[in-house]
Image (cartoon, rainbow, N blue to C red):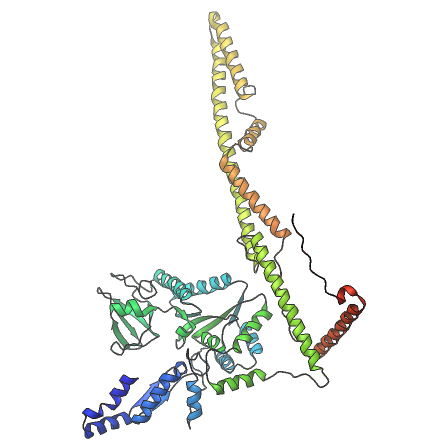
Length: 564
């Protein structure tokens, strides 16, 4: 800011009065416009307002107070609204082709009735529930590839740069296969390490007034030059980025972090909602796509997913100032049903505390049991064993098929070899027989002896009297011998693999994964009163047992066995 201040005011000690007045008049006619002002920190905002106040310049802050705030001290937009005599609110939504969805985004922005909002979004397909993180990741990456191949623009709001890089690589490959991009003559990579292709979408990550680019601007690559520089364009703007800037301050823009997608407008968008997501992150992720927006949650059932979503809409990201905090408290209190008259608040508090303590203990037991279970079943996740079991069943069936195919091939080869030897030896016996029949009188005896010897040799070798073809019973004997245990090492290895898969499946069936305990949830006022009454009754019974039973009244002294 000091540099900007100097440029606006000039140096009074070295400028005459007329020049200074001219600069002040020029500054007074200047309007400073800050877009995405909700992400502006308080310190630079204070410096900006100071400059505007001292020079007479106007300042306009534009942004959405419900989107992601500044990383450090924020609340600038809220303070500006409070200080401005005529703040302007724009409430009509133009981005979305689906007008009903546009109304839902307003409700998401205001965060009223998040449970009802979840049901509406889920019913219309704007919320997708997955059983595992891997399933969610597969669904997102598959859709990104499909949309990229079709030439549509997609924004994916992820929680880490590594995840963004992986999705960017998938989308880039898909667009390349579909012919939407082409390989340049020179390899140029951005800060993510991915080579940039002509037609790719990239994001600039550093302000540069000389290049006329700003942080988080998105561009389409039109040319990659031999010196490593890149020409990009967007909405009538065009600039050439030097090689060093490209290498240090650009990356592919098909997927980005939640802060990275803020301000983007695309055809389709995906967002991920977890138990640490904030309301601002959910709102930004769900409002990037014109055609469709999908929020992905990993949960055991719809109720758990609803709890994650409603919790996110009640969670703030960053600092938005005191007024925003007061509004959040008011909103969180809205709709809460206070205990009816006559309810013992002390008993209610004791019961809820006890219930939460019991639930916490059960969760710890479940976590320990889960860790032990995963040690007994390496490579299988206890949170979603069904997927692993299905994969194991497929492996087992494939192993059985491989063994059957190998056995068939081995038997066929052995039977063919035996049959060839049989037919060759039988031809020799038959030839000896013909020679004995056709031999002259003086050589007939020796020819008959040769035929008899050939027949005996055949029987000794094949264990059967000579016939043109081996009998089927003998073929079966050959088949069994070909695949007998110990005859073929490869076959034995495949059989051991089948046996290992079978034993692992049987082990899983005998040892099911631990089930996560269900979190306590509030019921109707009548149900809560009934729970209070049951809690009081259980407490009285426990006190009576402690009074009458010495073992309960006095805690036992723990003992340890000593190994000798």
